[in-house]
Image (cartoon, rainbow, N blue to C red):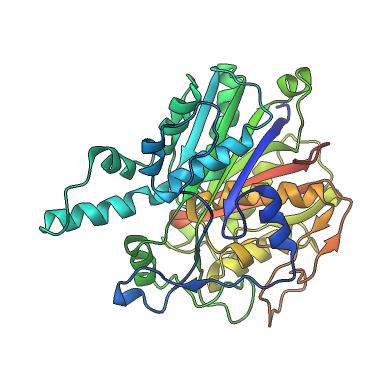
Amino acid sequence: MARIAITGIGMADSLGSNPHECWANFVSDEPHEPESCRDPHPALADIKCFYADHEWDKPTDVVLPIPTGTYAGLYKANKMAIHTTQQALKLIPHSNNVGVIYSNLSAEGPTKLKYAQWLQGQGRRIKPKQQLQHLQSYASGLISKHWDFNGASLTQGAACATSLYNIDYAIKLLEDDDYDYCVVGAAEEPTDSWYLSYFASLGAIGTHSAPFDKNRDGFIMGEGSATIVIETEEKALARGAKIYGWLHYVGKSNDGAASNQTSPDPEGTGIKLAMQRAMRNTVFDKNQLAFVSAHATSTPAGDDAEYYAAQELFPEVPVVSFKSKLGHTMGSCGVLEVCYTVLALQNNIIPANYNIKDCDHSHVPTTINPTNKNFALKNSLAFGGKNASVLIERGPDQWN
């Protein structure tokens, strides 16, 4: 398989509303702390979240302008999807021959809460246009409609590995349907009482975001969205596109039989297999691997299993978790952290892990380090034993 070019990037999370802001604030020495949960439910009083607070209420200047009324009625996650898609398409020539693979797993939360209240005689009936936003595929249709894309438009659900599965499917669409390019991404706003109470009841929510730290106790929920435009190497080179990075294979696996529903196999069998599959049929020197961009959410079981799996395959290669400053953005974490990984390779650095105070692992860097290596692996792990990993190569151009 030829390489797949990343020719557009859009990002928004608690650190910023575009790639420049997100990256500058990630590498900054300034601490980035979550804030107390804004949901008034008393059961959530002690929970903290990373909120993406930007000017979402102002309609964006998109290629095919969205009516002000339509935009104003969107939930934050869908506004983020439009916002990051606009960024990613900034330098992309318009075409109708485009596929869209986009997910929003947390879409149902706000609508379900309002609908449940209405069923109990509390509050007004939800307007149909708002009610439709409970669909996890709503964002993909929204993007296709307003940019007039006539290719496949769909969403996938693979829990926290969702957006890497989206990338994998988009690559297959480029190969099978000869699209000019595909728009791929996810947007999540998992900070309502529906989502937070669910994960709190599972014991997954912690008090601070510190992947790999000995005192980690669970993840902090974060809001965020990322969109990438990908196209075949042949088409990208033919049109003289700016290429920010290259994608190789997405390796996928499942270790559900050796794990439980909420944590991976302690031996890391599934993520090792996914990483190995990500490198198949690729001319790749392991000595060119700058770092592993880990899924590592700050949970006691998951972080260690992934770290030791990475070290078994790539001894002494640094392992980095962007969630130390972003929190866990659920279904969007894969594609969002692909973007951070691309930016790290562009800037010739191995990022730091933040909030580490006590760590037994030798290859979890807590300071930024230079590198001249061209590759990184991005992992995603998910409930039910789902694993995915994608090999990323530095491209020749800088995002601007």
